[in-house]
Length: 58
Image (cartoon, rainbow, N blue to C red):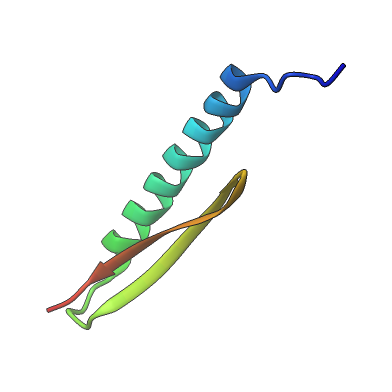
């Protein structure tokens, strides 16, 4: 018998990961003192690798 993955656990872990990414991205954006364009990727795994890109362009 193939075990069924615990979807609630996976979704809870995904929510924790995305909340962490949001906090880190916010800190990163707030640290930028100059107006130079920047771009940073925050990546996580949910079945495969996903990345969120935070960018600011003047």
